[in-house]
Image 1: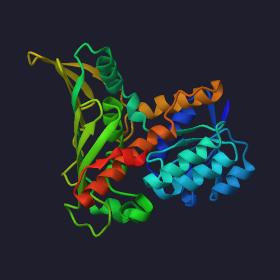
Image 2: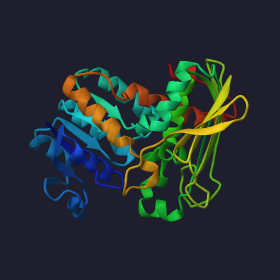
Image 3: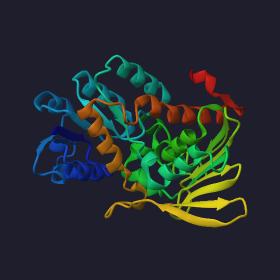
Image 4: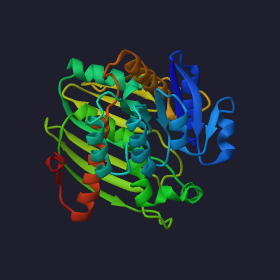
Length: 336
C-alpha cells in the first residue's frame, strides 16, 4: 500500500483526494496547505502548513502536487530529492525554462518517477480516436483543429490574483485552460515543425496574462493544425477536437467522439465517462492516470506521462508567445 500525501488543497485537490481514497493501492496519510481552514478537506489525516516539515516527518511513497504554477518546480524538486514519487498537476512548471530544468533534474534521479497530469489523453473518446487513427482505416492525418471557448470573469482572477500575473501563472488561457487540448493535438500530429501564433487580451481585467490565443501549426508529417482558445465567451462551451483524415473525419465534442465518413454520414461512436459531483470539464480521467501512475510505482514501469512529455506543451506555449511578439513562425528546432 502506497503512502500518499497531497500538497495544496485548492479547487482541483478534491479530484485527487477522492481518487486516493478510492484506490486499493494507496492510503492518504497527510495533507498540506498554508490555509489551516482547509484541513477539513481531509480531517482524518495529519495536516501540515509547511510542506518541508511534512516531507521530513512523514514516510511517503508519493506526493500529489496541486499548487499554483510557480510552486510546481520547487516543491517537486524537494520531493524528488527525498526519493518521493510525484503526481504533478498541470502545467508541469510555470514556463518552458523551468520545464527544461525539471526534465534535467529528473534525469539525474532516474529512480524517482514524476507524472504530469495530462489526463485527457486517457479520455475514452480520445483513446478511441487514437485507435482509429493508428489503424489507418481512414488514411493519414491531414489536419487537426482544437477549440477551447470558455468564460473566466474578472472575479476568477480577483479571488486568486496569482492567476493573472505572468511571474506566478506563466500565462493565461493557454497554460491554464487549453493546455490539455494543445497536448492532445501534438499527441495526434506528432513532431511539430513550426508554429505561427498570436496572443491577446480581448477583455481588459487589469491583469497580465492573455485571455485569447491562436496558432497555425505545421507538423513534420505534413499535417496542418489550427488552434483557438479564449476565456471571453459567455459560458464554458464544449471543447472541440477535430481530425481530418484522407477518408473521413473524427470530431470530439460534448464529450462524444463522432465519425464522419467520406459520404458525409456522421455517427457517435464513443462517449467519455463522467465523474459525478465535479466541474464538467474535469472529466473522469484523473482517476485513470493516477491509477496508472500508482501501478507504475508498484511495478516499476514507465507507463505514465513523463516530464519529457509535459515539456512539449510548454514549448508550444512559449513558441506562440515568441511568434506573437516577433510576428513570424517559430521553428521548434530552437527547443532541441
